[in-house]
Length: 414
Image 1 (cartoon, rainbow, N blue to C red):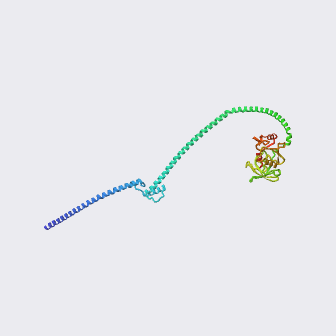
Image 2 (tube, rainbow, N blue to C red):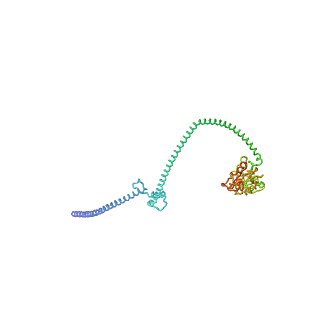
Image 3 (tube, rainbow, N blue to C red):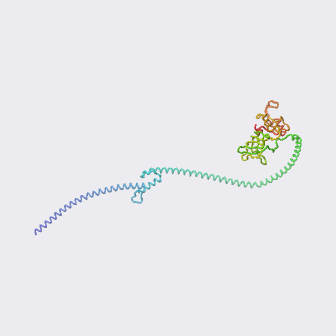
């Protein structure tokens, strides 16, 4: 029994020692664990601090990114943490380039696009402002034009109203005066009757005067019968010298039906008159340039109207030229250019004989310039015009045709 007790005590001590060892080991482990826990707690605190610092930095960066996103756009406003949509931004930048006409392909970032976009925007803004100013100017001009149009319209309306009023007044005046005009017409008709009666009386008086004049004319014709038998007129009033045979319009030349056999001379000038029935009208003048026995070539000039040209059968006339018979003329006045001898030679060439004084058979008195000497060759105090000469008055009294040198030059070339 004693051994059993000893063995039990021995076991108890072992267990006690074991328990103590385990206790101390536990204490060691506890100590170690406590040390590790303290280090872990420190690490946790340090990690928390780092997390909080990282979180703060993250939040700060997120705030910056959020501000940038809000400032630049291209984000979903309904998202809790809006972020910039880079694809949307790229598309927008491409659109920005197209909208502002930026052709340079080198810009990549928003900042690179901003400068040309601002420049294009300022240019567009300036153009827009210029157009707005132009619109303002045009609007002002349009308003002024409308005001002017309104003023003109008002003035025209006022003028039209005045004219209508004037027309109405004239119509009223016409109606008021119509009765007066009827009275005046009746008075005028009565005056016409009275005037007709006076005209009848005047006709009777005229018939009496005509009878008296006829008696006096018979007496005068009796006194001048001898002169009438010897004094021939240069040319019958309706007698013409010839006619045009042909015309060359391009050369302004033609032929007439009188020639050398009719004592026609080169340089003789004729009036070309219309050949139709009725009153003769002057169409041109012609000058003889070449002669044949029965015809002469002429040059036409001084054509009155290109719409009334010279044609065959038109008549020709020269107040001095006579194709047949002997004519007589007397010279009066001074002849220097042409000289008196040249005038006499010309007249002789066309069948006109120059007489020393007026006779019964004198047909023409050809008048020159004023004279400076009397009949005896003595100088005059003042020159005497041809119409002041006695021979001029005598020619008028005897009905001799008086032709001035200017008329003679118009029909002949000296």
